[in-house]
Length: 181
Image (cartoon, rainbow, N blue to C red):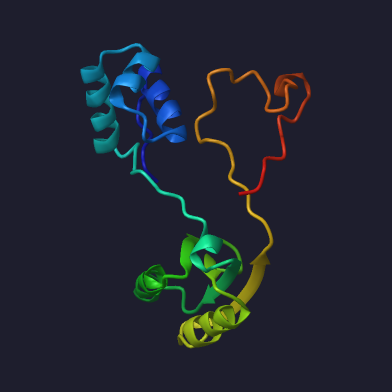
């Protein structure tokens, strides 16, 4: 497990802003957190070098790219050993249909999020892709009807405020139903 990094208020402010708009200019970012632009550039570089900022991501709509059907594949791999796991992970990551891969505890070893053009392509991926591999002993498929993006990793500055105006500390859940993507 990676060690956490010591972050001060300026670092946290930079991260809060960048996680919501990674295209923000250094000048605007510096003004928002109250430091000089050169200081802001140095801080962002340090956060990248320290592995806190992993990169910038462009989110695409799979349905507009001809892949409207999304599914979660629960995959069991046997034997569950290092010499099998590495090649399995690399093969899955090379699939253009694979959107995310999670290594799990419990009866299933992996959860694979895929996006395909339709049911025939999903069947082909499961039957000719996953179950054709000797080490895959079981694949269970669940269709995704809707998906929501969740909140940012870092809470906003006003942590005491809930997402629906009810203070979580006053007994509210702080949970709201966001719009689907």
